[in-house]
Image (tube, rainbow over all chains, first blue to last red; front, top):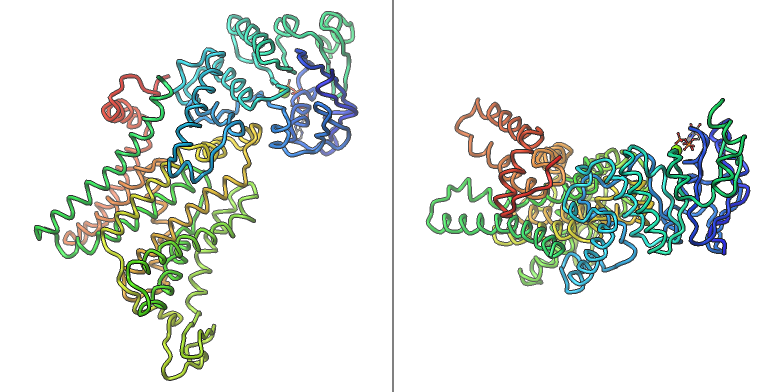
Length: 252
Length: 357
Ligand SMILES: Nc1ncnc2c1ncn2[C@@H]1O[C@H](COP(=O)(O)OP(=O)(O)OP(=O)(O)O)[C@@H](O)[C@H]1O
Ligand SMILES: [Mg+2]
């Protein structure tokens, strides 16, 4: 069953057609890769999917619901969560609180309850702490729960972003270059974690990545972007052997 | 176990902050009872609480929400005049206790509403528009009050924007707000005990807010708006929440102020931008986002110039030196390291801290 269905998506920045006639269909539970040379428009696609930019053309359907042009927070509530290529953590909050912000719409009590410290405050906070710790454990971050997010090493910051996104209980998880800046060890660990998340959270994952080892290792299908347009798509092995794709990556 | 620890950690820190005020209150009461407080010092007790409430509440906007406000004194002014008007109006017809409680709530609520009113158009925008608009608000509100004339007689309330005569009050009539002369005869309901209680309430409101779900949302917006939006946080809602609570608490400081004087006037020195900037200085020196810091900085910086009056010429010199020293102590990385190593460890009895790496 198709979870994400994108048709004829496009946006222009002034004269630049950053994304043009983009389409993608992702099935529930799939681990899908979006690749392409620098500046191809991959991050822009994520920004269109999450409402950071409003598309000038096209239609985005998530789980049968039209979310084209919706606001970012409504798209998150509809079920898309993401990480960012240039890490965007809440740097002056603790690691635990970063995840708890992600849990914001999962748990609730009123502002008055919080200020007056009514019993419900303690009950819900306890549940949030437990849920957040559970997520941190998946990413091996539980020991750093009290650290400030900005004091984490780079690789762990990337993982924390994934944990925070997962906390919003999405249907679809978008990862923008999750392995960027990681060493080969961390990368292979990350591959295991991504698989684990897909299997244990019943997650559908769309990821952007330049690391071909990661892409060929975990992605089942790929779409290749070049100059804002879809150059190829299909099974990972086939796409990576496509002469056109090799040409786009190697030569100008 | 770990999760439990986190709850108690923030609660502990809140208790310490509130404890500082309670201890200071008791010490002052004992000194006062023993006749060991100068009249200068006695007169400073309520203003100290007022400035501390102002600094703590401004820190909610500046340090916790991360928006610059240059008109915090404007909200104080709103709270002061609304409550003074109310108290004067019911001076003869209501008992002092309930009247003052209503005055406090009224001043706080009206100031919070004016914060909301300013916030709704401005906080939707991205960028530093709030600074400009609050600056203007502070000046405008002061000028409006200075041309406002309100009085009453047997026929009811009279109002004019021109002068007191235009109200056509009867000979029995009473002027309530007299333009630039302000409000005269507000009952002196403020005292150190009420002021200290309101300061404690302010601290509890702000600290409990910060350590709760809405508080985390507010700080998330401060740290990264785009990321906050991406996890489903309603940016405008939480900005408005923080800003109107901040304004409301400033309004309560205004209520204390108005009921501590017999003549209330809106002048540049009490409600102008100089005052707003001075409060901002307390916040910056106490540390952005550091609520206890705002409390301590405001007390030190209000007391200092007063206690040094006899030093005359050297007064401002010493004041400036203290400002510089506090700035260094708060912001230099070495000083931060030092504090994290010693004070937090000592206060919380914990070995490892988050300051590593
Ligand atoms: N807000 C914007 N305004 C103008 N141009 C933009 C904007 N965002 C992206 N672009 C342009 O759109 C093109 C695609 O950028 P994008 O960031 O999507 O590339 P990418 O495929 O993610 O590249 P990389 O692999 O380097 O991250 C680039 O030419 C970029 O300069
Ligand atoms: Mg990119």
